[in-house]
Each structure stands twice: as structure tokens, then as C-alpha cells.
Amino acid sequence: MNFLRTLVGKLWITIICLVAFVLLSVGLFFLPYIDTNFTNPGAIKKLFVLVSMIGFSLTTFFALFLITKITQPMQRLIQATDSIRKGNYDTRLSLKTSDEIGVLSNTFNHMAEELEKTIRSLNHEKEHLSSVLRSMNDAVITLDGSGYVILTNPPGERILQMWGDLPDEESEAAETVQGSLQKIPRPLQQMFRKVLDQEGDQSMNIHVKKGVWSVHMAPLASDGGIRGAVAVLRDVTEEVKLEKMRRDFVANVSHEIRTPLSMMQGYSEALLDGMATSPEESAELVQVIHDESLRMGRLVRDLLDLARMEAGHTDMTMQSVDIRELAERVYRKFLVRSKENDIALRLELKDGALELQEANEDRLEQVLTNLLDNAFRHTPEGGTISIEAGMAEGGHGSELHLSVRDSGVGIPADDLPFVFDRFYKADKARVRGETGGTGLGLSIVKNIVDSHGGSIYAESEVGKGTAFHMLLPVEKPQLS
Image (cartoon, rainbow, N blue to C red; front, side):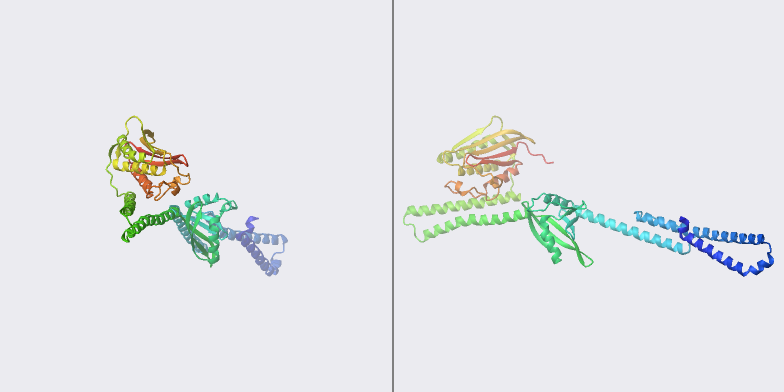
């Protein structure tokens, strides 16, 4: 039955019918001749049987011929087409005939070859695009027209995971379509709607979880319409922070310089106008001008030192330094100030050698001087300041633990992460009546400690005092 449904089967039936029709027509035409020459009915039957067998043999021969020339090549063509459908694009036909089947075979081979080249080219382009996306530091997120994510690179995946944990007021919970597509994060929804409505690129900075992201989103056009959008995101938190620090730095420097300059100008004008009626008043005005000039000189010197250290232009001669001797010298230098301010100054050095093999003595003295000056300015009368030093075992060998403690007013926990920033100052209410610092001392201290391969951190509790701890490697750090 399956054979009868094929093209050859149908042709075979058609030929049989045609042959039968021809034989019947010829038989009717020769019927008088048959009746005259064949009087025996048995002979007539034999004649019809013989003619039928000859006709059937002829049609069968034509059917087998058609099977060989048409059906088998067509079956091979069907098998090759099915193989290409399954992804085997290197399938080819080996039919070498000069008829239409041969032309069809050659056309099929040419089509398969072109298809293979096209698929290979598309795969190369896909791999190239995938490699480009993977190598990008910026996050790329591709969205369809409904706002579902259809393609991302690894940074984009991390952003989707990070923003998927946002609370409801900042981001919607992740949604899926058919268990595979993720909904666009809420921080990008407003921008996505603008891209679809205005059919143009959109750029803006968005703030998410204390971070700042620069986002550029462009529409994906197809057949004259918008079928989605692609967003490129870059983390610019550090750039924004640095820009804010630059603006704050300029504002703070201007303020710190403007104040002593204004006072020097005002008091000098008072002297020029003869407002001082006695030598004592003149001396007082001159003393104020002198103090303010010293303050401005300290500010300029600290700014230059900090700029050199941050630029790496400070040359420090490293040699063996006896911390015990250094601490005792700094202790004696501040004894007079401690007696004048009624503050107990203590020196607590542990037994044993306290020596650094690679250090700069002048810079370490500057560190202790800045820390002690800061402690004196924030410690009220009757308080205590101590210098402590001892050896400790660290993760990379022996370390020197050097601390400066005071019993001053302390630093709030919210301010502790910023104490080493430039121009950080404690609340002015906590500063004693003497001249305040420049706000650069702790920044200079941190830079010096970092240049020695060490670390510094602060511990403080409001009302109980502050402690600055330094950990300095005893031996020269080994470069990996």
C-alpha cells in the first residue's frame, strides 16, 4: 500500500490503466478478425491472457526503471534534507546524472554548501560577540520589547544578581517567563520606558546601594520598529567619590588659607591705621599676625608633603631604626607641653629589642609627633596620653606594634572610617581653645605608614578616648 502512494506507484497504476485501455481498444478494433480466425473460445482466452501478461511485464519494467531513476534519488534527497534539518550541514549528494535529478542534486549541494558557510559565519560572529562581551569590564544587558533580559555578559549577570536582592522600594522581585527570562531591574525601568517612547539613546547616572552607575541605553531596531534595548553600565562610584573629594579639597584649602589671610590682612590694616594705642596692643596685633602666618606655613608645608607622598616623589632613606630611642626622644620633646596643659604623658615600652631594619627615622618621628599633637589637642586637662611599643607576630613575620592612646573626648563610630581623609577634623566643640590643626596630619601619617609597608587603624569610644595603632614590619617586605 505504501508503494501505491509513491509517485512511481501512481505512475505504474496509470501506465497499467493506459496499457489496458489501449489493449481493449485494439481488441475491439480487431474483434471481427478474432471472430473469423479464432472460433475456439479457449484460444481467445489464451490470447487475452498472453496479451495481459505482456502488458503487465511492460508496465512492471517501466515501474522498475522509474524506481531506479526517480524514487531512489528522491529518497536520498529526502534523507540528505532531513540530515541538514538535524544540523549536519556537511551532508552532500553524490548523484552524477545529466537529467533533472542531477541538476537538482547539484543545486542541493550548492545550497548545502552556502548554508554551511552562512551557519559557520554566524557561529563565528556569535563567538566573536560572546568573546567581546566576556572581555568587557562594563556590564551589558540586552532586553526584549517586554522588558525581559535576553542576553548579558558576566558583569551584567553580577549586577542582575546584586540588584535582585534590593528591597521592594528599590527593585521588584525577579520574575521569570517560562522559567528562563528575568525581568528588567527596577532601577532601569524608567530609562527603558523612555527609550521605547522616544526611540532614542538615553544616558544617566543611577544610584543603587551606595553605588553610582553610569548607564547608556540604546534601542534595538528591527523592520522599522523597536524590538528591545541594550544597556551598558559602568560603575563610576570611585570616580564620583574622587570628584567629590577634589571639590571638597579645593573648598577646604580655600577655607583654610582664607581664614589666616583674612586675619593677617585685618590686623595689619589695624596697625597701618594706627588703631593700636599702646606698645602692648601693637605687640598683641603683631603676635596674632605671626601666629596666623605660622599656621598658613604649616598648611602649605603639609599640603606639599602630602602631595609629594601621594605622587611617590618623596625619597626616604631606609636604614635600621631603634624605636626605643626614637620614642624616648619624642617623649622628652612633649614633656614640657604635657606639664603646661596638666596632662599626664606616659611611655610604656616592652622589654627586648625594638628595632626596624628598614625605616626612615625622620618620617617615623613625624608620625609620632602628629599623633601626639592630635592627642594633646583633643585631651582635656587632667587627662592621660601614653606611648606604647612592643613586638608582635603578624601574618608575614615579626611586627612592631606602636600605639598612641589618649583619654580625650573620643571620636564617634560614624566618623572613624574618615579620620585619615584629608581635612578631616573632629567636631569643633571637642577641640580645646588652642589653635586647631590643618586637618592633614592623619593623612600624612597614613601615607608614611603605608610607605613603610605597614598599616594603621584607630579605635575610639566617645567620652573614653582614642587609640591609634600602627603595625610596622620588622624586616623589609619581600616583593612577590
